Image 1: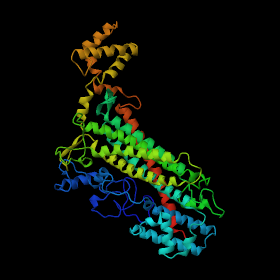
Image 2: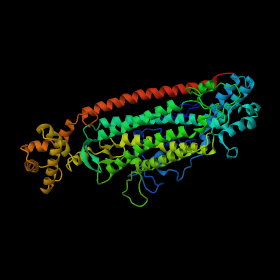
Image 3: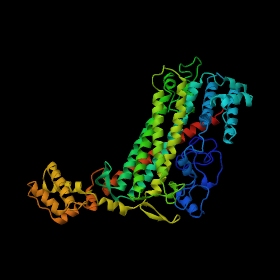
Image 4: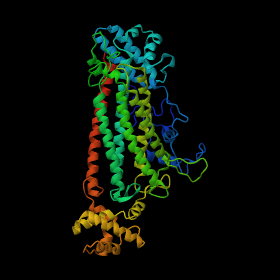
Length: 567
């Protein structure tokens, strides 16, 4: 299940999920990857070594000389062309078992079921869990949902008559809402770990680019001086807010709907506090109607977080795509995250990045559908709420692998350009090319103007007008990158300013290195300012990892208690 698992086989180092990679199949170790986030069992350096020893692949329409996507990347790029999504309720089996255990314990404690009945039910649930981990318990469509499948298996296949009383003091309404709360809580844990891992990658690589000057862009045109590290730091800040939103989701929705029944409670004297504790929740939902009528809301909140996250990842993706074009010539992407062409031999297409943009659009559409589901309903349960399950599951299915892919691209494609020894090709950011581009298109003229304001005392607005004139004069003189000394002095004279500037000063104040050194304001791209920002981000990652680790451990303890306590 993830942090909560009775029979862990392999723990994903990226999201924490504990399950065989890729589902029930058992491919070779190098081909195994997490079924939740798509992260491979081997790290990318190990995969490089393995791929460097492989021969030409003849199974695809393109070989592996120029591109070499591994199975999880192929699956990510292929979408649902040749893969199925599976039954939604199969995902809920472990969570429904947990809910059933908690409910059975509570019913016995409240003397609604006998101890013997409770033991029989718990033994049956343990057998279903065993069958599930062996891949033998699969939900049957004829039984409609996971709840009926498990209850029928208990009473029919296992002959446990007590199972006919398990549904006392609950409805499928509160049961599925509780199942989904637990499922979403698990995905929030997975997603928090993935986002913190991506933040760590961004800050680590950003430190390698503190002096990698580049032009900042507004309107797709050169604006003022920045660094590649500054851009990576901006992406990390965006992910920090995503993690904060995940904290809000967890604190808001980690309450148990179990026992709300149809939404209007029950006459049985149940103990909802006990079942909430066994489920690892902070307590029961305080109003029995609210979580049933608002079934779509936790899903929409999580989808909103995913939509914002994917929007940021899509901007990162488009930026990297542009930097990888021959026209920019800045990014040499790792071939693992690219694909070839069925006809054009030279193609190295940044498909993984393009797919991230598609997934951003898809997740946003799921959010819109969830918000629509919650509109204008008669207060209570409505069957259309059932579709909230599919929408949020599909949103997570699309979003979590995108975070993993982007993290790996940052770690292995955004480092300074170097020859990958195993693939024998350059991979990374060409900082020399970035620097050359930063010296073009009058990129340094704004900072030059700022320095002149500080040095001369001329009003900003007046000097801006002068500088615009100087740019125009420089262009007339055939210079398209820097304001010339002659143009600057002519513009000053024609505006009636008795200011003289040396030629060396005019040139030096437009140099990227000098500008970067002067940009030490908090939040800016200057190296010292960036070190401060990155240190704060590092502290955030460390503290949040500890917090989410503690949450996962507490949930595991609650899960273990629910499985192991006697009656």
